[in-house]
Structures are given as structure tokens and as C-alpha cells.
Length: 289
Image (cartoon, rainbow, N blue to C red):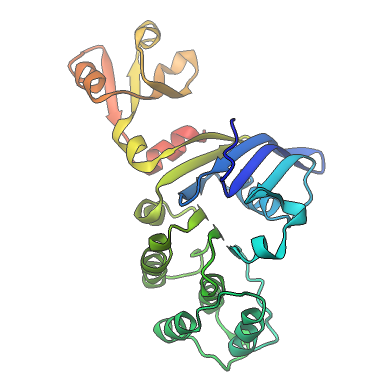
């Protein structure tokens, strides 16, 4: 993978194991500025591990991870100020009130949008002066999101950020993400298992499978051009798709591939080939079998 000098996220040859079990295997990944990338993978695929390695929250066994051209283990204060992270589990200072915690973080960032904090606390009905450990799980997750958005980051990394929110809370968060983050060309990495949420905000999707990023592409292009082809083995061998995403065992007679509009039109007229248009959920299942 050829590195981009201005890529906010660059990973080369990342490896990480736990108790002799490889989770990330010589993984390469980079994300262009202003991208909104949905990170998809089965439970246990290593999405949280990948994010934590990228942020320097876990030691790595091999390879390099860098943010804005700086090694993750040696980030400058200026680079740290560009980054916000919402973890899957709360990392708030739970012995403080929301007001006290937000005031603490305000001192750490040169950019802090107090008007945004006030607006979101009111819109999401969060109490300023209640001790955080007395808040519900959903309230804590909303507070984590406010803390992340308050300093207007250039890189926002979200690990299952809405898993504890009800549908109305997820809708409010996604609207805020679109209104106040996407318009600023913020780079976003968004790990989630709620595919309908991802479809509303992601520009690209990346699939993590068996320790590698096995595919990354524009969501729109993938949805337009990806199909499942079922046919006899000899017929499948004769097809010439633009890209093969997954080739299944010979006896299965199936192929997950991308074709041009002209190719698809021609295939649909054939009686020896079955073409299935797929949802994002279908593609996810096929990509991570």
C-alpha cells in the first residue's frame, strides 16, 4: 500500500496477539483526509483492538501506526488536540459531575466550543450537576459524545458510539454528526454493528476479517455494483468481473463480485447465471464468512 503523506491515519504491517492468538495480522490501512469510514467486522474480529492500537492505548507486536505523520507512541500535544475518541465503554471521570469533567477537559484543548456543549447538554436533556456515576448508561454515552465533539476535532474515532442509545438517541447523534462534523471535513472512523446507522453517514466502508482489512470502498459504489453470482463452476470461471470480493468453495458455485452496469445487464439476460442484488447486511455477511 502506497502511503499518502497527508493521510491522518496510516498503519503498516500491524500485528497484535493475545495469549498466542493472532488478532491483527500484518495489517495495512490508511484513511484519506475528510473520509468517513465505517469499520465493519464480526464480533471478535478485532475492531476495538485495531482502534486501541491505532490510538496507542495498546502495545503492538509489530508494524507501525501513525496519526498525522507522527508515531502513535510519540504524539505531540498539537496532534493530540486534533483527535477525539468515543470508546465502546465509558471512560468518564465518574466521581465528578458532568460540569466538573467538561471544565477539566476544556483546559486541555485550545479549541473548545462551549456553545456546542451547552446546546447539546440541553437538547439531550443531560444534567450538568449530577455525579456521572449516577447517570444511566445511555446518558454516559451521550456525555462521552459531547466531550468528543466539544473541541471540534479533525479526527474523530468512534467505537460503537451509539450501542447504548435508543433509536431516538441514535437519530439525534447522527444528525449532530452530519450537521456539525461532516460539514467541517472532519475525518471519521466509525465502528458499529448497526448497519442502518452506518448507511446514513459513511462515505466508505472497510471490512476487517481474519486480521486484515480485506476490502475498502465507497459505500455508494459498492452498493451499486456488488452482486452475488450463482452458477456452475465452469460458467463462473468464464466470467470477467471488474473485481472479485469473495470466491467461495468450488462446490458452492457462488461468487461475490462487482460488475459494470453493462456487464450486469448482459448477465441478467442469461439463463445459466443467477444474479442477486444485495443489501449492506448481505454484503457484510458474505465478506466475513
